[in-house]
Length: 87
Image 1 (cartoon, rainbow, N blue to C red):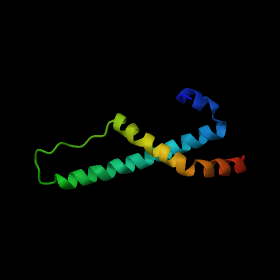
Image 2 (spheres, rainbow, N blue to C red):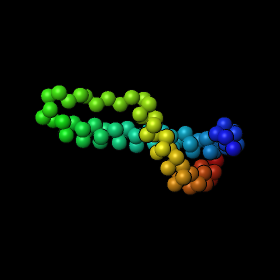
Image 3 (cartoon, rainbow, N blue to C red):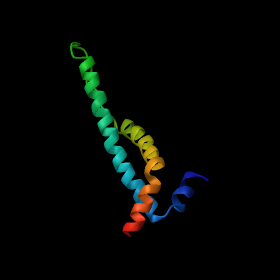
């Protein structure tokens, strides 16, 4: 089954769960990049020629997608049950 068919076969609850998890994964990616930037700055503190570390959107999404998959695998069923009980 390709990705588009898999997405169309999901219920509305699954779409909400994936959206929530992607937002959470975006937060984790942002925190990860902050820690990497802090580590890089500490390593280069005495180097006058050190470049400033910049994060591109491609790198952000490249890190957020694996976080989303991991979170979905870990928490997807629990969130589906919890949201199902709410509605």
